[in-house]
Image (cartoon, rainbow, N blue to C red; front, side, top):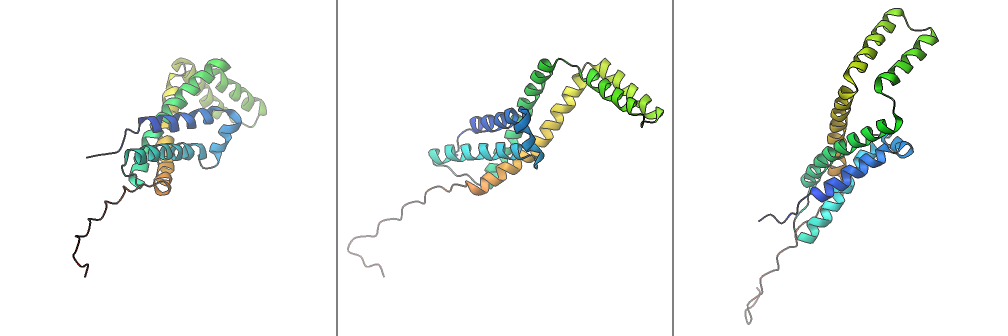
Length: 181
């Protein structure tokens, strides 16, 4: 009989915590240090799940930590996609407009060859036609990949640190009057 509880609560908390913290500009810079917020999200989920497992009397090992971290990465990607959409609504500048501003700055510097500027024009027109949907899908895929890798690493670390073994069964009583030779 499996005594381990559902990992949904732990993975949602870990993944969304990492996504929200990554969306905050100053705090999100911590991800520059080896995606530390993603690793922290996997570690947090692993900690919460190990507590739930201990309360249920089950076992929690490194493999459980890896599974928790992997699922946490999926919730991170979903939370990151929502945070990105909200940020785009607040900034109110389309990706095509952002790219066009960058292109104009590169052109005004005078260091870009004309062939490169033509390529940048093609990318800018493609972005204007796609409406940002393609960038959203690419961003989600990238977040899913990073979340799967680094949250799993955090879950593995958590599995090694917070592992739980079930209580050992009590020793059978010795018979009375008998010698324990």
